[in-house]
Amino acid sequence: MKELFIKKGRQQTVNKEIKLKGIALHTGKEAAITIRPAASQTGIVFYRNDLESKDLIEARPESVVNLERNTTIGHKENDKASISTIEHLMAALWGAGIDNAEIAVSGPEIPVIDGSAYPYYQKILEAGIKEQTEKRNVYLVQKALSVRDNSASITISPYTGFKISYTLDYDHPVVGKSFFEFDALKDDFAAKIAQARTFGFAEEIEKLHEQGLALGGSLDNAVLINREGTVNPLRFENEFVRHKILDVIGDMALNGRIMGHIKAFKSGHRLHVELAKKIRENMIEEEN
Image (cartoon, rainbow, N blue to C red; front, side):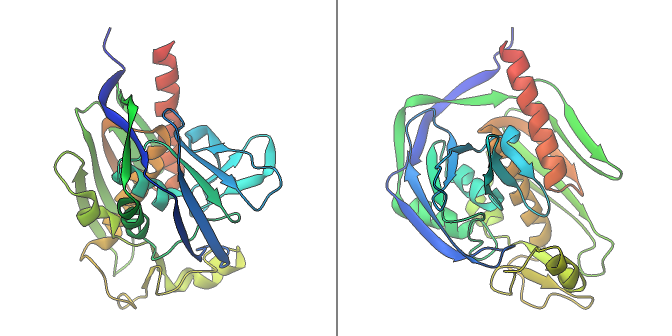
């Protein structure tokens, strides 16, 4: 029988407590997080420190409770305990090689900082990374899995590494169609992916605000796009597709470390998490 997991190095956590604060992208309110070291085999867990009940919420596909323009996780026995917009932080933890961490959040959403994963990533590296005694398990995807919604799709296939090939295709004169590929064995996460910011369209702002979304969005934490171009300058010529890959990484990190080749076409959080759930189901089935 083929090995489902390989031992790849040792598990890691942050060396010391990390604090970050700023505006939350969707609520528009002040938000703060504290990232703390955690024991081996803990995984990434969150909790709301503004609630009386400090229920731990595991960052896993089955914890996802909302996917409206972000990835939100919650506690199955406490409706109040939910935390939104975790995807950029999850990508940063993955990029820094963090397997175990406990994250206290001041409210229902984490701070967006500059709209990318880079500020979190920087803070993690500044705090230092602590190697732990337990070996790290990396799941080997055994067979192709895919999810589709009309023209959008995402597939993962067996691959001896972690690779994402993303095709972005927007019916918009500024965004248009672009392709980018990230291979974790060859490419630098910090240089190629972590700094890519979230983006939004000027024509959608009023509608999003009516839905209670993007209330904290600004030129400090997102790229704003109108019909003529971007209102604020880009960090990369193809920043939009790079940010989409960042989102894929953050959502796939709900399963910890995995090995596979992801091919995505116009996919968003909903499809990402549906695929992550399929991967999780296969992990459980194959273990039993």
